[in-house]
Image (cartoon, rainbow, N blue to C red; front, side, top):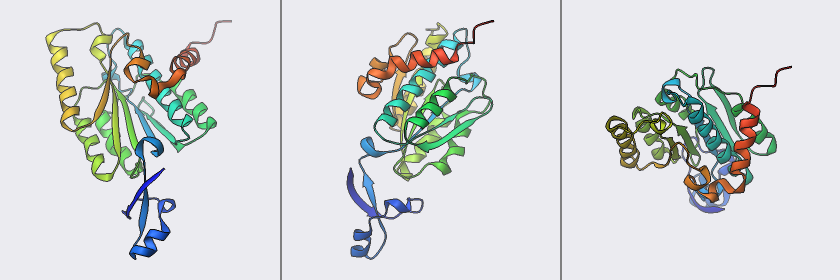
Amino acid sequence: MVSTVRPYVYGDGINRIHWLSSVRHGELHVKEFDLEQAADLWLMLDLDRSANAGPSESAAVETGISAAASIAVHTLGENRAVGITVTSRRQQHLTPDRGTRVEQKILNLLANVQADGQTPLAEVVVATMPQLRRGMTLGIVTGSTNREWVRAAATLRRRGIGTFVVLLDRFSFEGRDDDESRAELGAMRHALAEYDIGYHLVRAGDDLSTVLGRKALGVRGSAIRERTRAWRAPPPRA
């Protein structure tokens, strides 16, 4: 899993120091891992009300929750640590950890959130930066077309932090397909491409295992979506 070593940079974890290389070079060196196989993941689910508005708000929110849940379960299944920030009215955070207990915590959290947040995604990204370590990956699930958060996320690369985005086409969930909505979504996609941030575009009715890739979701994606919907359903009346 270790691909190479490099000089220590402030913020690197002590447990990543490669002592033999450090002695040989006369300065601290740390282990670099294969990002796809070893990187811890910090998910950020954007539930700002303005990014999920429209008559089909519930469908957009459920899709975002399903995507976040599926990615989290797959990553934990690879024995990688997963943390999450949910930007609902009361922001909730789970710091990265691994194991089935963390999976249950994340899914229980996602089962009870609503799109009632009021904090712009750019502010949340900036506030989360001090908690992200070199070698981690930040995964953002959002329907926001405000490009300020893209510029904030783009600065992470200089710190050795990867970023990917699941971009929800909120206009499709509203049933809109006009020049204004296409231009706004196009500008958002252009901004992500300009800063070389990888993204998956999800439209209303899309199958997540197709859009995100079966390798990412595995066979468990649909099962997670059903479990999440079941937990979010209101309790039966007596």
